[in-house]
Amino acid sequence: MTHLTPEEIMRIAEEGSDAPHLRECNACANAMLEEVRLRGAIRNAGRRYTAPDALRARVMRDLGSDRRRWRGWLPLAAAAVLVIAAITMIVVPRPPDARELIDLHVTMLASPNPVDVLSTDRHTVKPWFEGRIPFAFDIPELGATPWRLVGGRVVYWQQRPGAMLQLIRGNHRISLFIFRETAEPRNHAADGFHLRAWRSGELVYVLIADVPDEELAQIEKLFR
Amino acid sequence: MPLFDALYNYARWLVHEPAEAEDLVQETFLKGFRGFGSFAPGTNFKAWMFRILRNTFLSSRSGLRAVPSISIDEEPDEAIQIADAGPTPEALLLQQADRQQLQKAIEQLPLVFREVLLLGDVEELSYREIAETLSIPVGTVTSRLLRARRKVREALTR
Image (cartoon, rainbow over all chains, first blue to last red):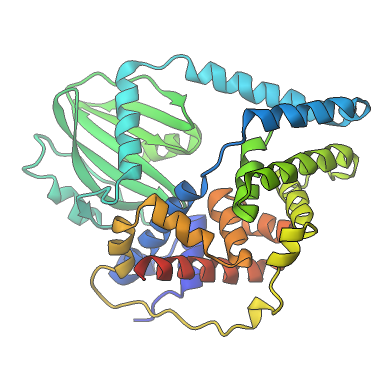
């Protein structure tokens, strides 16, 4: 079997593009997951320094003395104000139960072992949950989609066991939580994460990731 | 102020000394501010600001010291073989490597690798934007990123 080159693995990890070979080859699938994990770890380690307030003040003072040039920056300043306003608006309503799920997702992102069953094959992941959680669910075929299944684990939320599936697209890791007999949290966004929840029969599904809500809506369609 | 922390973070990774990094950021904003008229709408503002910071750094004393005297692209690019089975060694080492070890590994990278890693993995610029910022071809961005990550992996296994 011809393996993917490191360049191809890097590009797939970057763009989340489709590579049928990854579904057949564990070595390349593992190499790609490691690539994604290393990038995440580098990103985390690389965000190391925060600008001191004194510097901010110094730069503002500098720019202030260059006042005649402010006109050029006005659209930018306006855009910054809009962004801050948008962030404030979406952060304020945060139901407490949803916060717990986002914490679970973040814990998973930080964990060196985010999944207990590591497989891109839904026929491996789904049976793994049998006997571990008190309900069954279906995992759709993701082969033709930009998302790839990575694996899953059992999680607890509101004293109930549930399933957490992990999907990836490029650098983005997406958690899908599945619980039974519980109320679904409200869709919302906080701290750069979007949460999208829906009910299907007695099961409640909750998607969380740092991707736009539209993308979560597309994943929702696949699982409905 | 847009990009303030990101530019400061990048500057600190380039020069280490807090005071020097602060001067770099201050100068970058002044240059950006004064040259905003020359910023072409539709191009990437973030890449543009990072390019100003990098050019300011390169013309500084530590920047001149940091520039390598030989072209790094002349190094042979040894191939990586993918094992046929079993967990990759990276899986194990990444589990063990903590943030500080990783930071040390990034710190010890030669400038050309460190900056491509910071722009790509930390700032999440696209290959094209990195190419624009560093004034190098996109193909060079790809090969430098590959080699930078390989060097990080090697540093972690040492």
